[in-house]
Image: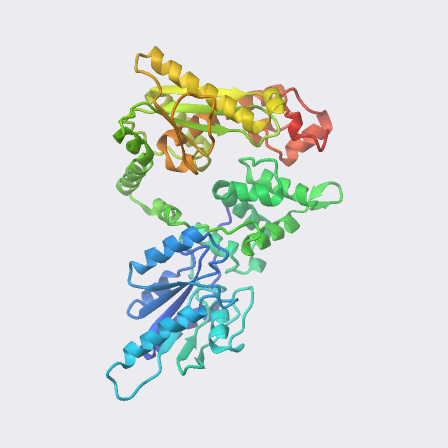
Length: 508
């Protein structure tokens, strides 16, 4: 990870003093934040400085961020008494709504006054969140300098709007030091810190780490990847190979790849992405929690992730299985599924979507789940079956196998039969068990999350064993996904008996 990202030009110290000096002259503060990073783009210094003033929060670049997350954040900020608007300051989307709010506030200010005075406001925010673009839209002319790099606005500007209101622009103000390195990274991802002072290849690598965990399908779709490795560097190399970013001697052009990924994230070409959801923002503070606070958070998550299971139990279902799969995207190895039936009093903390859990933690949870579960059914289809019936049908076949195995275990223990299954967006027609499909089930259902961990660890262990048998393809690290090392292994040594030929038609 990039350490100690700190960018605090001398004029930013003056900005803080400027805000303090002029705050008494304004009626309200308009705080512009980046909708993709609503936590990281809110400087706590600004929060402290303008806390005594009425505030309008502009959730800017909301067309680049996830709409659901935009709505959640808007409601969150409103609870603190703020007025919140979702805007695109560059295009002017939302400016008419802003004027309506300002007109109302001016009427309230001058109510019952003989001498009417114009509303005076101050615009604040970190660099490159869109303050200057907003000012230009409000004034109807290019009153403020704009750019796609931070540090453009350097001094105080009092501006008059067409309706007589007055506006004070201030330069962007960053932290003197980022206490949490993730804050610095998020600001750098979105361009609020100059790329020139950073190692751009490392920055893009850190972004890929985030995207492969939070938005894996967008990354796969945008760059037409065969799948994702757990290793971000291997994914970066796969992107470079797909885009042809190759230097003489078959060397990867990391800088060109990095610029492409960063530019396409910042322009939402990859997709509308919010790096800090409400749930994720709480995780930002986990490192600073006491042991008791972290324990409480995990206990609350355990309760939250059982909402579907509780609903089914209230309807009379007792034996409920969560079903998930791992390994649909790799070029080699099987697709592995699991069906896990947990007891009602299951209290193991930390169970979550396997992609969000570290390898070490997955191994720990694997043993605890197997120990406490009422049943753990495993199903799999090898590469030959995948080639014969396609990956989707093979996945369904393996899931049905896992469900039947879990049911067999329940019967064998004298507990009864499997009564209902929870499954992530796949309909199984070959099992005679009622089922509920849940979008992002591995992040929202405890049973499905447990199944995702069981399937993941089972398959990973298999691929490590395959690496000992076929050492030239990097199976121990890439788990069969299409990384640079994997493709080089195929080029130099051909395919193995575990490769999926239907996934390799372009190179065979």
